[in-house]
Length: 408
Image (cartoon, rainbow, N blue to C red; front, top):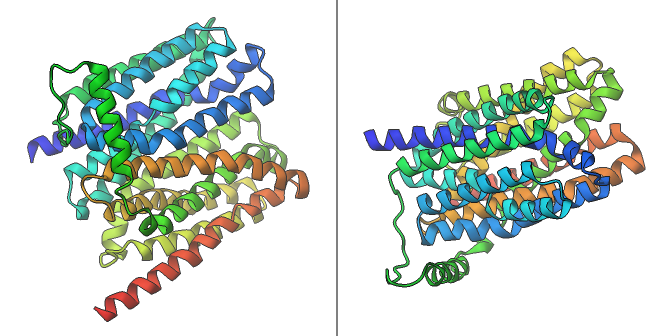
């Protein structure tokens, strides 16, 4: 029990450090590319490259952690990320930046592996609480990271310093990961005298083979709900800054404060998730009642944000919107992992991240089309359509689940 608690706390710290590191660089990346002479199209292409690689590599890296072990895979991916971010701060070549983004797109899967470790450590009944805490610490990292990164970037060669600090944070995470108990032993035994390349080839082949053993058709509904959630949230954030500036005449600084406010309420929601579940959803073992309620809450929140006449009311409505986002992120993951066997948790966790990456990949195009056709205000309202669909789908799943229980 002591080791388990220690490992859980280490996972929380790793989750925090990971998004702290990402929060340092991500808000500065587009501006850095502009300084290197990149066009808006090139910037969009590099961002799409990263998201596209996340889609492909997520299930593979997750399956590799099933075959090998979580600890080794996490250390390898963290090492690649640390090297990648250090090189990102040293290069002035857009070609080199593209290569580095390729490496990061393939290897940056810290959050999904951490979630897989949590499922290895805890029984089903305790996972939601642990996911909530992990999300809360991650949110805290993304509150602090952009603020510190913004200050460092104002120095001479500021982006280089930011990338160096990001590299250091990933190295610290490697040290923390090395302390974690190896919760999942390797399932593929290769002769120790084989070369590293030979062993990796064996494990990689086994990873791909194992993915074919998963009954993907039984998971389509959960993946669809994850996609809808990711689409709605990305649609909102793609319009948020422009909407706040045009509707309420906010400066960029105050837009940043609004984003931090959203992250802070999300962190508070994650810490309160256990209490909310215990008070209102004790008997919701299927997770479907929570999904239905939260998709409905998200729909109403997005419509209310669109109708808010002033920034004060807008900030008030952000609270239930942030609450619904946090709960949906955690509970949809909980539902998916409930359907997973112990040998496939990493694969499903990685696939879940890929679903979110697909949503992030297609949403900017959809948002742009809606904005060009109907205007930015309508695009904000359009963000309420996906969670409305999610409400209907999750309600049907809940109704179907109830009938199956009655039959049994």
